[in-house]
Image 1 (cartoon, rainbow, N blue to C red):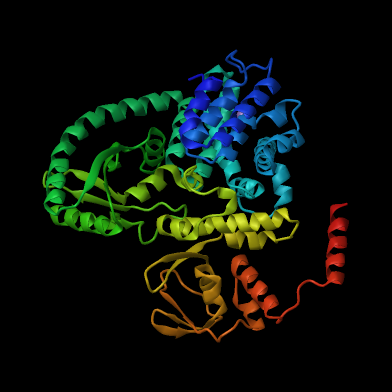
Image 2: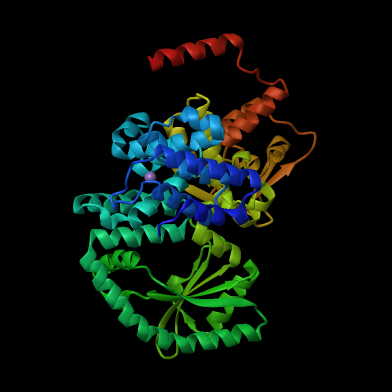
Length: 514
Ligand code: MN
């Protein structure tokens, strides 16, 4: 598990260009020097830790800036290296990421600071996310850091083990979940739980092993039947078994009073196909083969989970009275379910700091990208010193969400109470600009009436129609408000901030700060 400089470089080689690899080489040297003489609890040189973190980030497909920040992530906190040094050698972005990671470590020591900073937010997780929300890559680096600390937890004293394990389950697991990073969430939870309650972990592991032997044999027949039926319909697919993780089994057992007989999805069959249409075809085929349990059919494709997870789930009853859960999804959905947000920073895609290519991402992870684009937009404004009330932050980022559809069937994610113009600006700022009316579910819909979950919203536009000042009262999201204001300013309908107003604003801010 211990990795050396050269191994990290060769791991990186296929994914980054020459200059980037030189930077990585340089970063490792700097970190090695900075951590010289420091040791991990295992007695190994400290540098093995940042190298392991960087290796994980490469494995997750992160962009070079994240990997560099992974190598350097503990230098500012634990060594003489300063942020200025890092900025000088690797630029603003990397320095910004390292600073973010350092701040999370400090924040986690005392969540109180953050409570003061953002008094109205609901939970620690949200606070943490907002604090680092300027760039979600900070959270992703932090997750890689935490993962390695969990992987090397055996060297820690028992009380530290418990503290880190508990915190991982309370904060970092849910955080990975929020970012849709299913695989990482599971890794974190399994490791943390195995330290928190080793006896229970072992017991459940044994139970699963025993039951799995049986159900694998039993499922063999089901799998064959399904395999044959799908082939007959000419669907190309992969099918494999998904075993429930120990920790999620533990949580589920708590809900059903420990009764194993109530766990239907210890082992589920996962079917991965090429298109969304095929997902529904497969569902139809399964339901003609077997009796579905109506209450357990879930369509997370048309209504994804808030973290962007998409799949069809169904639980069926076989003729031999076995209960079998199926999960059906496309390759893209599967990739997203496993890697979540990290997938959107992929080194083979564009650089994340330049934003997302809308066309491409929209096809793969529509609702999720909207959330994250908003997070970044808002964080950017916070960074520029703009004041945003926490209640507005809550509406934009952590409030309840609704899903609405375009007439073409695309799904958009809005805060509860979102108005038609919020939808229009979300689709495209030009659509907002030229809107003159709305149809919702086929009927004319006023500007000031909130949309509801599941609405089909059609924006009526014409080139000659332009935004009006009164619209400011007809938008709820920060995104729509910003776009609208910019357009109104451009049209000369409202003025930009005057010089005098800017000075007053600056003064008030200074007063508050002192
Ligand atoms: Mn670390």
